[in-house]
Length: 110
Image (tube, rainbow, N blue to C red; front, side):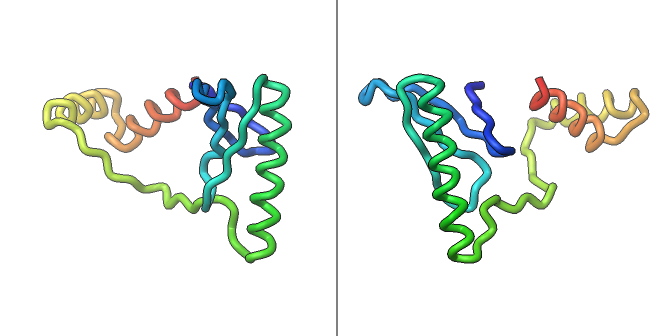
């Protein structure tokens, strides 16, 4: 995954062939903020500028800059996978929720 981090914020980086530049989109915000750069140094600089502008607007409008996450989400899976998860969790002596949390944590950490 092409992710850049600055000051506790993350941005997804993609190449835009039409502009021949890299585009960053800051993730997890209560609004949209993007930036462009020709190389990593320029991307970092533009990321920081875009973030500063977004945070200033949030302060001015008394808005929380980050999206709120409840810690709950629904996941639709096949009945076969559900059964496999239930058996694997039971065999490990844990709930499906705990097994899923471990798997998800391992995925985003690595």
